[in-house]
Amino acid sequence: MIWVMLPAFNEELALPPLLERIDSVLASAQLPYRVVVVNDGSSDDTARLADELKQRYPVDTITHRYNRGLGETARDGFEYVADHGSPEDIVVRMDCDDTHDPSYILAMKEKIDAGYEAVIASRYAPGGGQVGVDWYRRTLSRGANLLMKVVFPMKDIWEYTSGFRGYRVSLIQDALAIYGNKFIDLKGLGFTGTVEKIIKLKMMKARVAEIGFVLRYDRKPSDSKVATSITTMGYFVLIAKYIRPWGAEGKRWQEAAAERAKRVYADDGTLREPAAGAGND
Image (cartoon, rainbow, N blue to C red; front, side):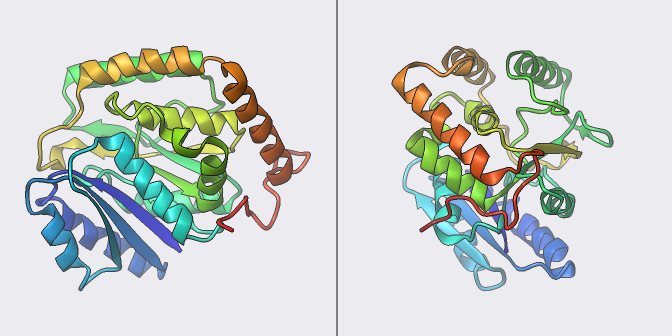
């Protein structure tokens, strides 16, 4: 089963065509799937449309009465999939604004089937790029990713800020078991939680890969929700908080992550089979 998790805030224009394209890609590949739409207090018709689209597509909805931000929205979506999915399932987190092409889900699945636990759709990997992004956002994004690469180096990984990712559900289940509600802790600092997740998976020694993808910002029908000043500040808070694990909590995280790595990975670094983590017992 592939779970597609869509955080949604005022996406009435993008949601119907995006669900149609997700269905086209996954149904054509004969892959069973469910979409989890997390409506984050939208003031437009997103909630009504999501309910109506349940008649055409396998859609589950989670609704926030008030807008809580991307961090809490993503957390709720991941917790839902961790509770309802099986360890061997895949969960793909996409933006709901039609800038992420669902066809890349198939390449993510190939990587995960090959033994990776997380796959990042990267603008900076071979075949990647971006269309419709102005020079200011391009420069800011490139600088942020280079900074994270220096502070939190990961082999062959260059895109830390992309929210378009695929994960083994077992990995998310284990991350929630280790970090609890602090898997995404920096919830009020813009899009910082997107980077925070990958850093915590690095702490777990998860095998992470990249695939090239083209960000189609020119297809975005709604205004950007990124508050660049808040997110930039959040990156520096994140560095201070996670450049090393602090205190008793940090030590507990390290110990739990090390135990998990021993259980999940063989001595040669490959994923043990069957690829199951703590699960949702």
